Image 1: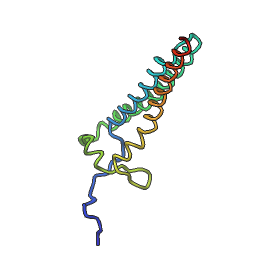
Image 2: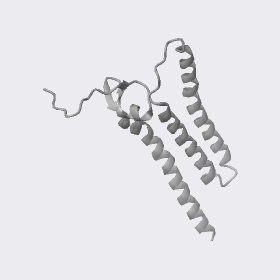
Image 3: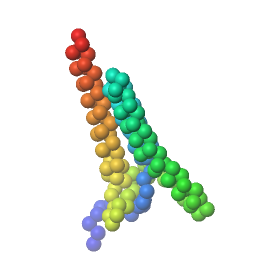
Image 4: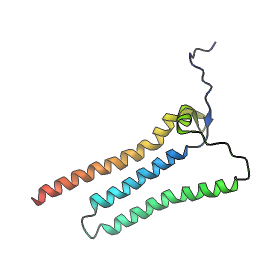
Length: 136
């Protein structure tokens, strides 16, 4: 006998929704922008920030290029209509041998990026305040 009160017949997806990828790229861009805005105070740090920005560009660019190549190769096959973000989050996400709820999968993917991006922003704001107080 089924003990669930609600039917568990949810769709299962094996790839992330494109808006999750967009949010991840936005968080990486936020990290790079805040690094430049909040920490570029001397001439010797600019080269390091340029290398970090290049690293982020490559880290975001390679998966994007690979996804474009993959979509072009499978474009001959009939593609299903992309589900809405709401439908994707309400469904399940396949991970190795198990499934996660779509919302939990989105949180698992985006939470580390959010922590790093907003953490760097907070540290940068404190750095700017302390530096301004030291100069006064």
